[in-house]
Amino acid sequence: MADQTPMSGMSQGKTFLLGIVAGVLVLCTIGFFVLLSMQFGEKDTKVAVNTGTPTQQVANVAPTAITLEPVSDDEHIKGGKKAKITLVEYSDFQCPYCGTFEPTIDQVLEKYPDDVRVVYRHFPLRSIHPNAAPAANASECAAEQGKFWEFHAKLFQNQETLSTTLYSSIAKEIGLNVSKFDSCVSSNKYASDVQADEASAQSAGGRGTPYSVLVGPNGEQSVISGAQPFSAVDAAIQQML
Image 1 (cartoon, one colour):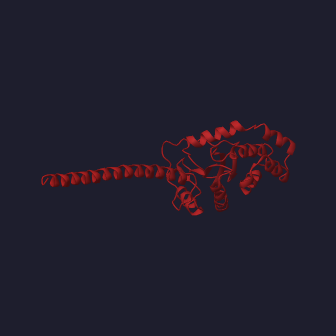
Image 2 (cartoon, one colour):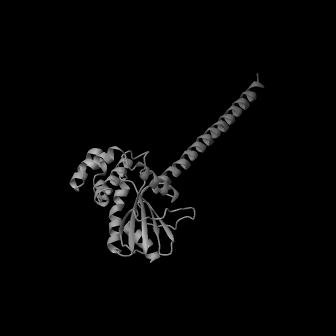
Image 3 (tube, one colour):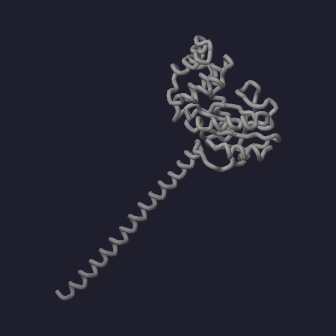
């Protein structure tokens, strides 16, 4: 009987030790999955930042992998006809950050009326903005009657109510032939043009909106990701002049 007491104590010690080891293993396993989820969460956050979160950083130089589609005369262009710098903007009519960026574009054109021109291209983020592509098509229908920029401005002013009813109302307000416009919208006439712009955006490195590329006098490129403040865009322009 006297020999059984030490054996019982040793068994309890081993059991206690095994419990500690098991607990540590469980904690390590939990920690691993927590770190794993944090890692993927950081990647998701970084993607969200690139889709339009404003920052104070000057636009970075574009990676060499970027291929920007050359600007043609039939695109949506405003600004100096002999501008030294071209700002190609890929945007989404339903994207709130794109709406935030529009006043910055206006400031750029106001400060550099002769030195900068802006080219607008469509980049609807279909998975999260279901009304963006139809709005882009509608803007092309307005462009057909020479009123793209007027229609463009109205869409950004009414981002939360994008619909065929709104498009028709805007068409009437800005003096379009409403019947012709409505027919164009309902047939989704410019769907392929919008898709071509989307492909252009992706080739240029766009993964979110707004996404812009500055092209300098010598063809140098600088990327502006997100709704950067005017100060950042202005600094990037100054570097090219």
